Length: 93
Picture 1 (cartoon, rainbow, N blue to C red):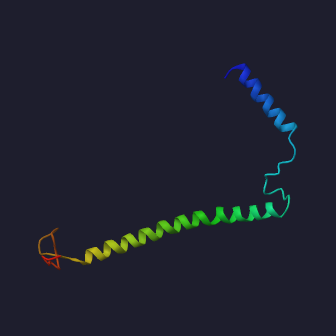
Picture 2 (picture 1 turned 90 degrees about the vertical axis):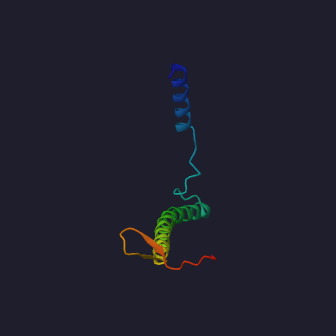
Picture 3 (picture 1 turned 90 degrees about the horizontal axis):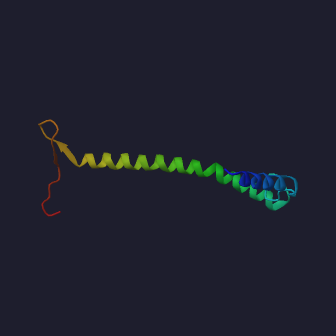
């Protein structure tokens, strides 16, 4: 990185550090009722979204296992090892 870019970044950092006023975007600072609502709703969102995602994955695995189990019930094993024949062989369907 060149000297000019480094000087520019340092100048911008110093100006933003020493001249800026209080950060009104901070939800924790408590600048009124709106920020309190934003803090609580963001906390709830960040708490429940991962739980819902993990629960959805477990539910999908449960449904898939149930579906595979139901499909295996449609087949019966014949006398030879490893071969299966359909129990309901209806040529019209």
